Length: 154
Image (cartoon, rainbow, N blue to C red):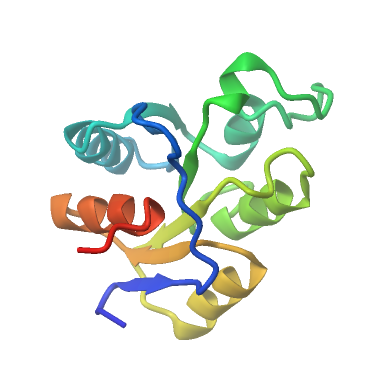
């Protein structure tokens, strides 16, 4: 395992076609959100951002006042990348909500954190996170992430 990068063994590709992958990036820090958005766009991803877990659930159609139905926007989310430490709802709690959804449980979720806590990493991977990455992310992290999720051979 490389430093700053942990992946679960159940890796599934998120792109079956040549389309641009659509990533939902969730982080309470505006600076981190903008950085992730820029890095993902540089890697030819379409990006939607959310500032917290409840907002991410709304974007995904799982908000408190929404029915658990798949709308046009939700179906296009190929991956979710979320910060671990956020006020109100942690990335771990968001991960659990996504994995509880029959509609979204197959969408890969990547957790990121500035803190390297092995028990936290293992807890997230056991709950179904595709990967756990240490912040700050850089372009090579995003390339590796995209490659891992697309099952690249390089």
